[in-house]
Image 1 (tube, rainbow, N blue to C red):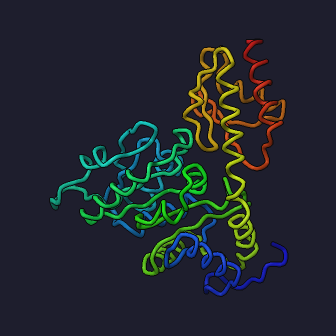
Image 2: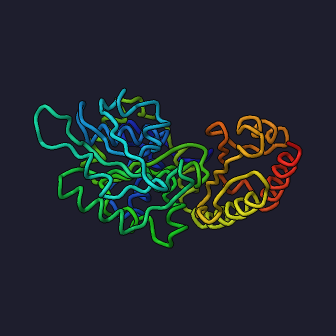
Length: 324
C-alpha cells in the first residue's frame, strides 16, 4: 500500500485503482468495474443507476439493503423496498412474480430485483444456480434489471465450486466486498457493462464517493483479490466446526447442517442468557461476536480466526451456559 503508484481517481488517473478495476472486470468476465469505499454505497449506487424515484425494489425481507443500509434505497435512490420473506433467504420467481406491479400509470413500477448471495441474515446461505438463472431470465423478459449484493460472493464460489463469473453471468450488476471475507481493510466493487459503470460513476460522485489518491486502498484490494479466495474453504471448515461444537451444548439451538460458508447463527434463549449479555461476557475473554436479536448470536469466521480460536470459543460458551 505504501508503495502504490497513485493519481487522481476522480479524473480516472489513479493507475492502481485502474489496475484493480480492470482485474475485477476480467475475473467476472464483464466489461468494467468501479471501486467504492463501501458496499452500502455501491449497492445504493446500483439502485440509483437502474431506477427512477418512485419505483419499487423487490428484495428478501431480511436483505442487507433493507435492514442495514439506513433506508438508503428510499432516502438516496427514492425507491420503496417491496419485500417478501423466503426460506433460507432464497427468493424464487414464484415469490417475486406477485410483487411485480402492472403497467398502470398510477401504480409504482418495479424498477429492480435484488438478490443477496451469500445471504447474511440467513447464515451465509448460497443461491442454487438454477434459481438465479431462472429469476434473471424471467426478470429480463419483463425488462426488469437484477442486481446481486454479492458482498460475500467469493464465499458462495468457494462453497459451490463455481467461478464468480459463472455464478453472476446473468445479473445486470454485481457488488462484492474486498473487505469482509477477502480481508482488505476497506473497499467494495461494482461490476457491469461499460454503459452501466459510466452512469454509476456519476452517482458515486453524487453520493460523495469520488476519491483522489485512492491507489493506497486499491493496492490492498488487489492483494486480497489474488490471495484470499484460496483461503476461504478453511474459513468454511472452521465455521462448520464451530456450529457442530455449539450444537453439542445444552440449551444452544443451531442446525449445523445449514452452515455451508462462514456465518454461524445460534439461539441461546434456553440457556438463560440474552444474546447481548452472552456476547459481553465472551468479549471479556477476547472472543468477539454479535447479538442480532434478543436471543440470537452471530459469529463469522475469517482468516484471523484459527482452529484453536474455534475450540476456545466452543469451550467458553459451554462453560458460560453450564454456569447459567
